[in-house]
Length: 511
Image (cartoon, rainbow, N blue to C red; front, side, top):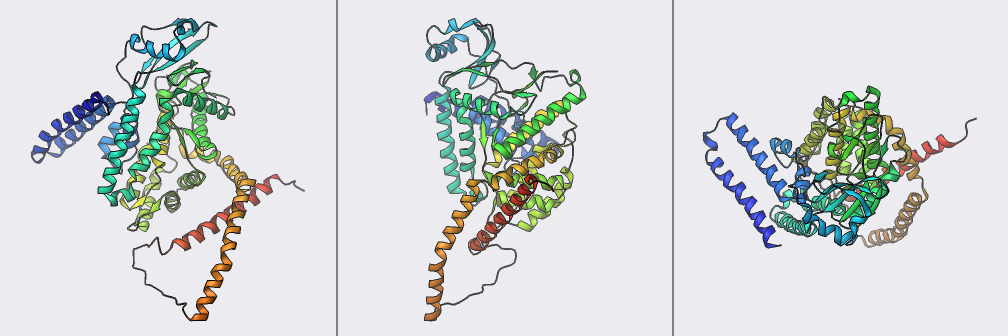
């Protein structure tokens, strides 16, 4: 790590400690109200420190804002307001990057280039307004000098810290796998350090929004690792838009399209915008709605997406046990897990969430409560849930600015048929059927040898059966692994058959 970076980290941590120690000494003399004020001041100081440390720490802070199982509610609420804004560097500091990436004659590509002030300044890049020689208005995104090396150093240091903590808190790590969670965040962030990867994300996203009449993604005109030239998004961010400038039907259509598109990414493409906060969505009355900033994209696998579908279906039906079962499919109970207690938690929580509009419900906060219950009951959650929860909370917050009357579960129910049909088509696809067939062949190939072993043991009188009493309230994952695997295969085969029959019945000619 560079000396300057190490000095900044030490300085920020020292300042936090210097403020914290005097406050801890006076804790016993404070009333409850004073204690709440102190917690709020501490949360603000932590947020400001993360903003000073740069993009990686800001993203981690945004992830933590959805993990109320790890941090206090006051801090989680404060971290929701984390924004990646930095002091503007003079253009003289950014000019060498343009020269290195576009050549010494880079200015000839533009008729106008506003060097006086950028459109936006973040800790990773600055964006400038410009006009090409063809007359087209564009945005030129320029990476700050040396930022890629800083992010790489921070990633290595945080990974080491997570590994160090995991060894000294093994039980905590069994429930919260910090290293795996950070790995998911780092993988999603890497395109932000290489604009050619971000450009590829934009090209893929442009294809995925083709089925939506009012959604679009900026065109990529040129991309290098540190410079990205793209078309300018019309309108303003959804945060700054005036809802009264839109007709009610248009507001609802925009909000529905945004949620539908994100559901499409979670469940069909399994590739989604991981940072759809209000500043990254531009709207204008009568015009398109534009997703910008594709530097952070998440990926989930088929099993995880199906588990999320089960959870949303449970919410839509006000079915707490179904939500609990979907969550358990997505995670893994530890040896000390209280599964029945988690089911009771969901039975109490789900009715509060069911069918509430965005105006009356913070879905991200509700998801944080589910995580809190899950962790408290000893259930390890998939590392992917953190970035998925961040994306979900961000799109919910964005839609709330324009169409607070919408319900995330109602919009999901409207799209459920398309989601299920996509799963059904995938279940009867050639690749999926080949996978099931190979699993059956592999299982049948091992069956004769297992039968011979049992027969030999019977002949020698060595085959014995033991029935061990199961202690109440305890689950042995090792002893029940084979039964769980068998149940998993049976459920999947039954589901594939049911979905296949449903898809066939939809397509066969009616008499």
